[in-house]
Image (cartoon, rainbow, N blue to C red; front, side):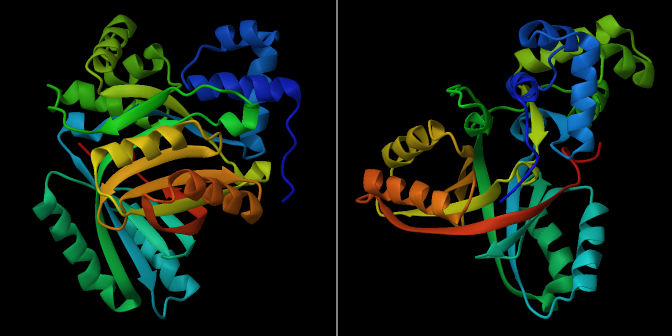
Length: 323
């Protein structure tokens, strides 16, 4: 699949942004060996070409008192107009984070934030009451932890650091100002403390202090750059693994293996549809099959089944529930 061709300087800029989506332009310029003006120009050009789709703070929803759920849907009798109507419905929903369109096992997955399982059921009931006749099958899952990795395959790099959200954590003591800052950084983590301060009526130093506190309390666990792999000629797949042996040791062994696979960008620990889920960005189906084959060669005695779905569109709606 053909795509946008990046030169060496573009790759270096992308690499720095992949490490830290909030990195200062001056720091990137120094590391890349260009002026700040040229780095700014190149970033804008990458945005215009669709390579860069945005920048957001990685926020641990568990620290804000929310759990993350996913609803997987297989359509029946859904026309393009009806699907557009569904997307519009989801876009107006305060508790929906994003919507993923698949080809394969399911047609769509919706991410919900809810305080508990009862609230999630209430949200599902609302959706099914209105659109259930268009759904052949639905499957719910609870997301326990998400491990986010760098795009090592793009840069031939070996940075295995990860950003982890979820887990057994206590909510952090957050006030209304904290939540407003989180919403602004979740939408665009490259906003400066001056810009955030002007919008919220705070001094830049106050904003800086609060952001540092949010990082120290692990409410913010990183700053991510949204890179459109499709524009670069890659395909984005979601894979689902079923285990023979349901133990924490099995789970962690496979997560550790996936972590150092350059094409894997997310691993999700969940209850429901699969024992483990992960996302990979590859050049073509042959490269995907090679990834799955190597996984089975390594862990064939532990893996009962694998299935995959092509992610061809993601609609990012909210990064946090509305205040």
